[in-house]
Every structure is written in C-alpha cells, then in structure tokens.
Length: 164
Image (cartoon, one colour):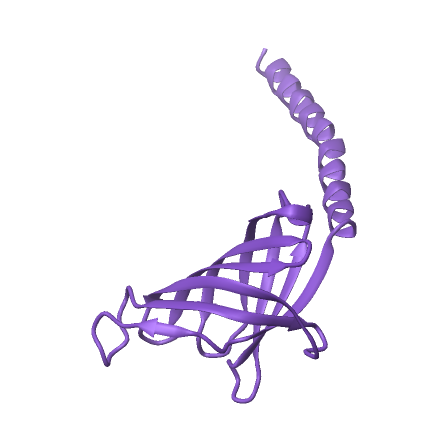
C-alpha cells in the first residue's frame, strides 16, 4: 500500500507540474506582448518654481514640503508644450536623502499623474503612473525621472512608459 501511495503521489505531482507549464508560457507571452504595446513620452521639466517649506530651518527635517508648478518642454528641450504641478514630502534627511512626490504633468491631450520617491542627489528615480485624464485616462506604467541641467537638478527628463 505504501508503494501505491508513493506512486500515486508522484503521478499527481507530475500532472500538476505539467498542467502549470501552459500557464507559465501564457504569462510570459502576455508580458512581452504588454511591453510591445507600451508608449513612451519624453519631456523636459524646467525646475523654476521649486519652493521648500522647512519645519526646522535651517536644517532639513522629515516632513519638509517642496511645492512646484513648472514649464515642461519637448524632448529636444526647444519648445514649451506643457506644465506640471506637484509636491514632495521629505522622508529621509540623512545619507541618501529622499522625498515622496506626487506630480501631475498637464499635456495637450490630457494629464498624467505619478507618485513615488525622488532622490535629490541627482540619482535617477522611477515613479509609478497612478492615472491620467483625456487620452491618458486609465494610464499606468512608470516614469523615469532623470536630473539634467546646468547645474544638475535645474532640469529633469520625465520619460513616461505607459503600458495602458
């Protein structure tokens, strides 16, 4: 009897493993197909209005707030095509400092809203697209935030990868 139970267990385990194979293949096909349908939008923000309200001046502290409303240019940085609005809250003020941000970029065809961390040392950040309006209603995906400008941090590449 023990031998029959072991054999039955082996058969059932093999059947379950084989049944899972098509599901894995479908998931893999779906993710590559998902990337094939993504759309990239690249714009350049000019950080002109950034204003920080500190809780404990002159030192940085958790809870400091950064607010802004800035012009946004095309990828070649030659023509203003949009603007953005947003705010960030300081969450880490020692070592590699971080802000948690909400940003809405107002493009001609609609708005795209993102949320996530921003490093103020010039490191790239990736924020989540949380939604949109107009042509971008129901948007999801991510936005790469890359510091540029002279000095670095006076301009930012916003590279949206919309997957929906």
